[in-house]
Length: 247
Image (cartoon, rainbow, N blue to C red; front, side):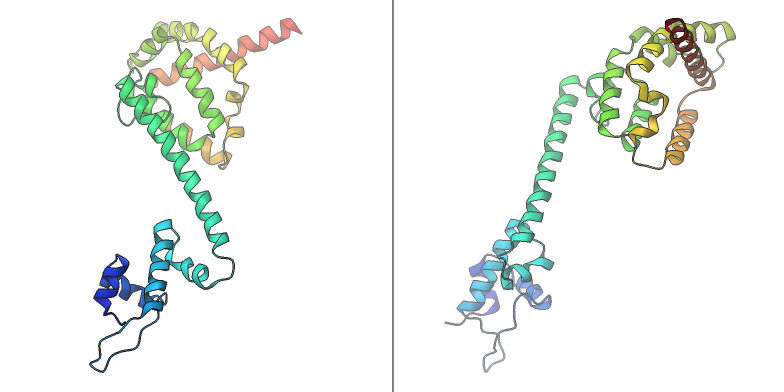
C-alpha cells in the first residue's frame, strides 16, 4: 500500500510540514513518486517515521537521531547524555518548586533571592539586591552560610542600619558600629571565609572584589557604608586582641 504525504503524517501522528522538514535534514529519504508526480510512501517509510517520532518524544535532538536510527549502539550514548540532562533538569525544577512553596508560605516577594524566602519579607531592598549578586558570585556552600547568617541577624540592628539616614551624625554612626561589633565578631569566628570570600567563588578574584565593591557603594548610603567599615575594623581589632590574650 502507498500513502501520500498527508496520509503518512496522519498515520504517524505528526504534520506534513514535519515530514517535509525530516526530508530537508536528511532523516527521512525522499520516496518514489507516482506517475502524477505525487510522493508515495510505503511501510518502510512509515516505520522509519514512527521511529524518528519515538526518539523525538524521548527528547533526543534531531541532530543525533540519525546516529541512533542508523548506528550500531542503539543510541546508548545519546540516551545516557539525555538522561543526565533530564536528571539535572528535574533537580532544578525540584529546587524551583521548593522556592515557590517557600515564597507562597512566607508571602515573600516573588523575586526573593533563592533560598531566602523566609527572611526576604523583612529585608531592605538593598539587602535583597546584594543577595541576588552574591548568588551569582558565590558557591552553594557560601550561600548556605549566608542564609544561616541572615536567620541569626539581630532584627533590632538590621532595622537600625536599614533606617540610618545618609546624613547621620558621628555619634550615631559610632554607637551603631559598636553595637554591631559582637555580632560581627561571632560571624567572623564562625565563618572564617568571610575574611577572604574569594575561596568560595570560581570566578576571577579581582573581578569578584570589584563587583562587590561597586554593588555595595551603589546600594547603601554613605552613612551605612561608614558604619560597615567601622564595624569591620572594630571587630577585627577585637579578634586580634582576644587572640593575643589567649596566646
